[in-house]
Length: 391
View 1 (cartoon, rainbow, N blue to C red):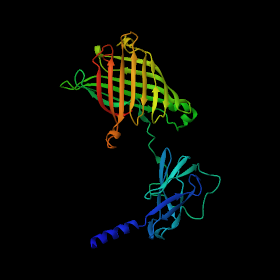
View 2: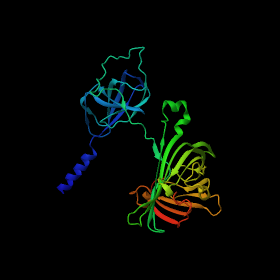
View 3: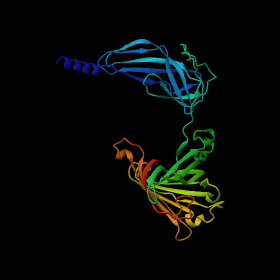
View 4: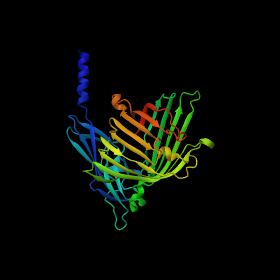
């Protein structure tokens, strides 16, 4: 019984421990570069016991904009050991100097304390009047108050699905695809503000490889490399209360297999891809995005249009958060030639109870030209199962 009482006492003590909550605010939502900055730190004691906190003579602050970040000091009007009665709060005035840097909206936080961020609009330095106050601002830290470089926002995203699938028709084999696109211009940059369409220019690279796992040396049978430069806006217009979205992608592309002599395959193209999506983009939706293109400089495969045609008919229905189906149909200019690729995916998180990421993916291919090397050959149909990393 004594031990039980001891643990009950510890539990009651833990329940009654005073915990501080810090709230940061600024009386004015705008400030000038190099001018004084005032802020208020409110310390809440939401417990039934007195709260004791220790505030240093200088609090380190962080001011972050879209392009840069600065660290500087804010001086509290009281420091050292502070006691807050139960169910009470204490306000501490903070003073400092706005760091040098770009004039734009910044988020102000305190490092070392779990405070909320506060938005402050930073204006250029005010040279017309003095912005002094009665008290001296807190001195800068040894590292200075000038804004330092901040990494630019990530401009890389997924273009085509990224996956690896394995099958056994005609011998154990695998197929994998990687695909990324890079936005060329920052949508917050000066040039993008003058030319709003320019931030919709992209450079992409995709690679699809067939891997022969049945051979002793496990060689790659063939790979297709597809760089593209294009303009894309997949949300040009909306209809039916926003459920129907219309967009476009258009540009130039190249595809080759990187081989030499008789195994060399390549061509260039100009293409346009209208896109239609109906439903919730993040939920259940149906979409249709045919890629219409031509062939330029196809000397390694002059009759490729007989087998691939001029349109890749992409269609799909489902949800990335659930069961999703999509396919690509190609119809050659000759009646007997063409191909079909069908895909189905389901989130692994739902199959594993939240332990796994990615998607379980099933793919079926039948027809001509699964690889660029065999664009004019119809091989055995393939059914493969694997994992999609990004869709």
